[in-house]
Image 1: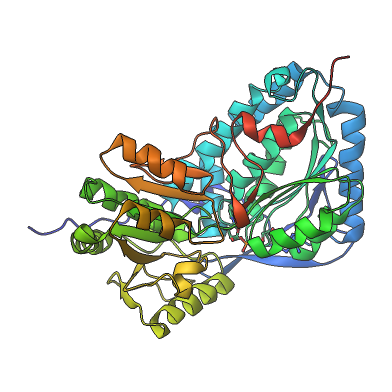
Image 2 (image 1 turned 60 degrees about the horizontal axis):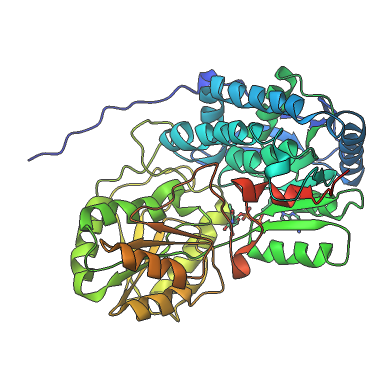
Length: 482
Ligand code: NAD
């Protein structure tokens, strides 16, 4: 049987207007940065320059926090919950209406396939706003007692792997609870946050309720250090998360940290193999593995390991790697040259330590940042590729003989964000979920999200939860009865 060839099915970049330069979004309008500095954001699939964005300096951070404080005291804080809720519903609807524009822009700035941005990132971002819109007038039932209060100004810093979705995870619960926001997107993916600022103008959100300031780590550090920020929310690397934890220790600020992961995806010998293979692919090649909860360690029962690996390699041979704007593409570009060199360095360490590398056959585009879907076998728990977060399309395979060995290996990591269990036995699923030290355990599926369901880590994967009722709690203080 010959495989069908796919005709190109390119999405159109013309559905979105990208300005040549962007200022900061402070107090409801775009303004120049007083720092006078800027940075370029590029398309990682082509290395083309997309736009220049302002870098917020200390004075700009000051202006943004002041705008958020004023809005908190004068408009958003005193506003009744049902009124706040109307704005959140409006934002959710506008995101849904403008989803194609947002999806295309996310692809251009991030490098992920349009299929993922269109079917996951943008609809989920809208869904989180819809979900938290429903909470804004029901905060008495959130779990902080009657009449809970917001903190005030939330300083939020997010990474580049799900730019708009991480923005939604941060902004939606903060606003529902009555806080105002200063958010800093990642330096390599600022554009959907800036388009979101445009959407906020369209939604008539009162000025200062959400402020978006662009820049790199220094801007993020300035924001978190600002004395008038009451609540800190950070998603990013464990290294920066630890710095932030030290920075806020001993201050009045409360922090939520969503950090790295090294999830075990555990395949028992009674698992339905074809479904498990799809789960492995979704677990580590979705968003080219640049996912904090990626199933980057495959733990497979020794008796079925050969069969699972053979079928996995056959499946990986069918993945289409390349132009992220093509609707048939499965795996897009790596987000930046820096990330590509980190993935390359760790994969080389896998070779050097004696693991066996296999990469899916096929040519990669010449321009841009690419890494082929890769599987390492003969991996031991001591190898760097089994311990460190690679944050790329690289799977490390380990085997086990007993459930206890699987549990010991799964928990043998400083991280604790997510895990997957594949088995036909319900009792085994429950026992594994009890024994694995991670915030999320998926059973016979992987990388599934729902706005009503909390997500977050144990150990060095951070603390606090996002999503669901639990995701509101970090944005609320006990109010007591009045
Ligand atoms: P990063 O920590 O380098 O950067 C994240 C954000 O923090 C960026 O906006 C960056 O500009 C900013 N930043 C950098 N230094 C800072 C500092 N000193 N103070 C304040 N802000 C600073 O991480 P990254 O490479 O952009 O993202 C990848 C990491 O994020 C991975 O480790 C991944 O696991 C993690 N991540 C976690 C989750 C989660 O929910 N747990 C989700 C997505 C990504």
